Amino acid sequence: MTALGSFHGRTMATISATGQEKVRQGFAPLLEGFRYVPYDDLEAMEAAVSERTVAILVEQIQGEGGVNVPRPGYLKGLRALCDRKGLLLILDEIQVGMGRTGKLFAYEHEGITPDIITLAKALGGGIPIGAMLARAEVAESLNLGSHGSTFGGNAIACAAGTAVVNTLLHGGVLENCRAMGEYFLSRLDALKKKFPFIKDVRGKGLILGAELDREGAAIVDTCLKEGLLINCTVGKVLRFIPPLIVTKAEIDEGLAIVEKVLESQ
Ligand SMILES: Cc1ncc(COP(=O)(O)O)c(C=O)c1O
Image (cartoon, rainbow, N blue to C red; front, side, top):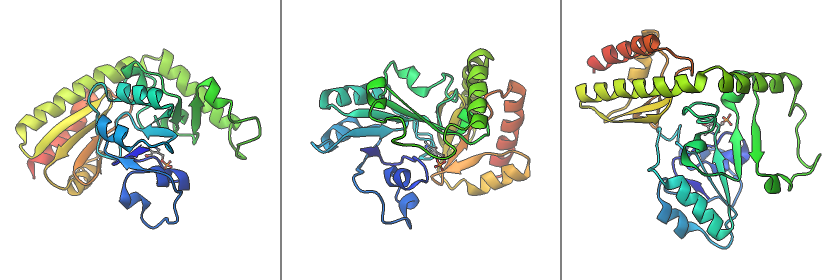
């Protein structure tokens, strides 16, 4: 079971798991067996579980889906559902993990323990690496040699991953992420008050979104011409994922550009 609006990657399995038709288009035949359920809707998830269901896979915040932050209690509810039905809870931490939300892993905000998490992106600080972490009894289903890849676990990528984890845990980065995230969100809130075409601002730590009542692609292009790199997901949600070491002065500089561009709307 995965969620509508999710994005889980571009291997065949993860395209198949992704709950967005536009991502799956053109890649048939896909892996069978995935069902897509509305996000942040515990009742819908429970109703969709059948005797053939083995796991629930979700993002804690849907990144590509438009910075969708679920209501408090959603993940706890999923955990309880999985426990009741004997399912695995798999969390895709690839976009929101590794400090992005102000904790090493986003699920730590929720006081739950998943069965499996997936990691990549920031894990290597720019060096390609991906990882899957599982509770011991789940991990035991893979034996040494039963699954692997030529460059899996290579020394350079693992050294980069180790350096990133050490820096995140001991370099004050998580604290900065939480403090700058709050500041960034308050600044976005002020922009929302100024521009009525901003319908919502949301996020956690340094993954933030501003939902517009219009397409955002032209705004992204103009920001780029002004020297600011942002992007737009699902057509109308400007997404801000600055470096975790961003400073207040840099946020001010970036948002001054955003404000100027929005004024021309
Ligand atoms: C939540 C999530 N999972 C997985 C991925 C990995 O995608 P890819 O297979 O393209 O590296 C991404 C990339 O944006 C992502 O946001």
